[in-house]
Image 1 (cartoon, rainbow, N blue to C red):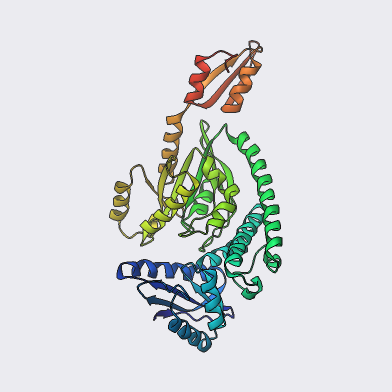
Image 2 (spheres, helix red, strand yellow):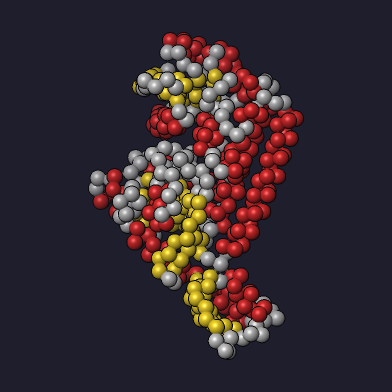
Length: 426
């Protein structure tokens, strides 16, 4: 087991060791990159990262993941450095986790639990708290099923926080009952959101997607003055925020900032946050925000695409937006990215670079599928007028003695339907 480096802070925090396993030289660099990300996650969770370790072995040990000898070595390191918690970058089975805990006498977590803990800390609204608690309980229940042990083994600190903290000391039956209740709460929230979505369906909708800390919230603030929390931390924003953006009087759209993605995002979180991610699913256009300054950019993009695939939106219309180009030393790198990914856009949300080009790209897509038309409705055409109002975004309206004049933006397919059928068919 080779130590990469140590970070020791002065502030008294939960002291942790991070550990990952590399099974071959090709995998090593990916694991090294993942370990660096784990350090950022741990610091976001409020931990002091004391050691970062990488072990080279051909395959995972079925009993203890890293082998009994390495577990003993880990116990010694933990004792010498007064470690509170050991966090694995890979997923552990309940039995592996239990055996490592028994030998090291330390709390053992894996990447999934660390991410769940961060979500728990950052959940502010009722919806986010319900979604996080549901994900936590489903994960704990899964681990409890496999381990057959008390949840109290976890102790305190990271991995045990969140809305469901006081309910973790319950048996399987009570966890199932709580999960059922939370799922009903989610159904209630989704039902309410469907009503809101129906009202919004008349206007073009854009959703921001991308890896955590890619700059989605910064872009949202630049375009809308939404005052969303912007921090150089992972998962700083969990709640979906929607704002009306106006390019010009004829081009207005709703933009939604969604939660950040990350590699190996726990499936419980994807399932539980369906209500929050619904805007990304239903949007007319998705902007995939990418941190262009990140050295392993393909890793972030692939992780986002994988989650989009799980949400069923991978094939839906998406524009890749390369952000943070102010941090790239040469223009050649940016130009190469734009050539590689057709119809992509390069911006710096922080400095306002390329924002006009991004808005122009959105406007072009709006004009491709929608059209602005002038319509007239006689007082007797109330049913036809209602049909149009449900489907069109009204830009302007005027009444005179003959009837109602509307200027609307509608999808071209609805315009054709309006032209080719009579009121009875509508």
